[in-house]
Length: 565
Image 1 (cartoon, rainbow, N blue to C red):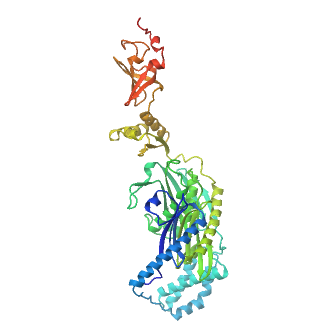
Image 2: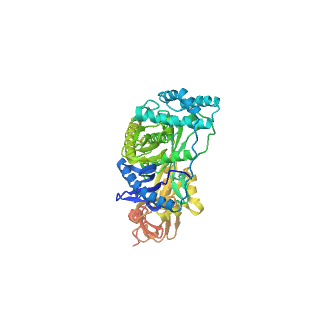
């Protein structure tokens, strides 16, 4: 099979405690939070042709140093593969070169070459005007009985060459912007509907994103069960939609494809480092980004829209996140970097380099290329230009909403977290779930979730959560000797009286604990329903002893009782 390989691939992380580089980290190292960033890079001949990065706000210099280490490993892997090919490989097939009819090249040169340059650099965004010219060209070709498939490929090749020529020789871009210029920006927090828990609108030129936030209880977390991870829960999710109308097309709406899943995952990866922990913010967080209009990096637009929605919804993120896509035009040693690529630059440029992060550093990178590889010094320059563009975008976002709102939406559920002992979990659940279901039914809470360590999440609305908390606290309250209470007498016995401490606990007032002197009988001393003061005198094996005489030494005298003489 003809190709221009081989390539090497390596995953590199950095231990956040020691700052040591970790080559091909294990699943344990990756899952146990030992790494502050992780880079998956492929490349050949000291260049890079693919990058996937997840990071906790690391500097561009740190990224470059890891990519430099990756190129060294790539060369070792290439040499190893080349050695195998030398030993057992076969001669590659050669791709047949299709002859371009002279009539086709003449038609283009005479009638379309100048027109293509004027069309490409007409300061218009998008690609529709280029497609219109291509259609005109193919109609002219058809009249001359030339293969339209060959003609179509030829035309796109000429578009590619002209875009490169304009950028490299004249410093021109298709839409008339400067090489480092970001398109017009717009940010809007909230104001869509009071039903939404949070919303954000973000525009970057012709890319328009609407992001919606929904908050739920811990029970709404997604359960992940894969080959690599078994029965884990995911409490932060970002989903990305790309309806046909966003590019002016009709088509089936609904369902997902690989592109949508990949774009959603990239934005999720970019935002994950700033999401608060479950201890700080016990909600399950779901973001949905709808692409309303697309012309260049809707995934990075989704990062921006989602940041706005999170802050509008009162999610206490550590810092806002923004993203931008950069490109490059390369011809041999000559190159030009492009900030905020769109339309034909995205399709015919040599690199799509998406970088997301905060003011403090990078959180995610994704790069793919249309050339064999990008030299490290070009990537270093692209990272710096992406940083400057990111700061420009963040300034627009923070001008609209600088920090997360102090309160979440009134439409969002209320979550209260309480802690019980692990051995009390069975007590709260009850046989067959009877107790916990009774609490839910009586209080009207939406859900009660209990973790193995005894953490209890109560999700409800309109005060129902607090009512359930009160029930659980009463049920699991641990009484201590010396506590002073007022209790209700529930039944009498010859040896004393039983009294209700709360809805779930009962104690015994022994006859010897009523007065500081001997009492022979319980007749007429206490009555059912009476509230009396007590001090807890004993807690043993779940049984609680109560003492009236310790709480009120004069109680018996007030009842007309006197010691026998």
